Image (cartoon, rainbow, N blue to C red; front, side, top):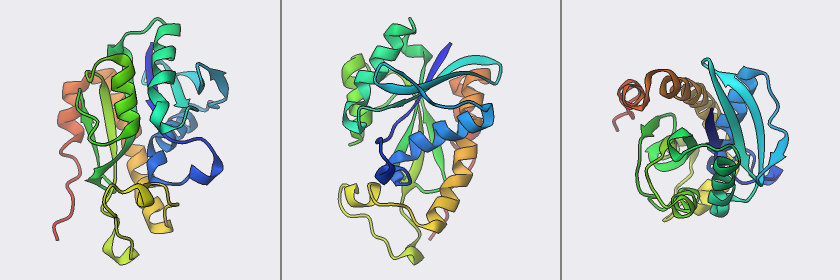
Length: 199
């Protein structure tokens, strides 16, 4: 079984913010698999299902972003899974909105949820799918301030949500590719699939 975790903050006020892109990706997988993320275990909402022929546990930590690692570690332990069985989806300011990147490992890059997971697990060697939320369209009139916190925790506008909606489908396909083809082939397939527009 694989543990597929989306990062975000619980509560309706955060539901459609850029920082909840990971939650939205898990919701999209659940929708495709026709399951409800409703079982509470290890301080997370979870659902067991099959994706691309593989048994998976979908999870949305309820610990708030900065403590995501607590739920992730507890789920791995309870399900007797290894770090290699973990795939995490989360928002990434350094990647343009509408794109995603798959990585086998990496530093937190200022992302508190990632910092929490690596800190609790004691390793940065886990698969992550980074969903771009950075650089909103100039015509939106929104600017990302240093650190991006205001932007990350503010509700997304209609045009931004439409762009994110398309990449959520890509995120599902990326997870499926990791499960069926392995992370190296998935990286080759998706990391060059959508290039940011030149200015």
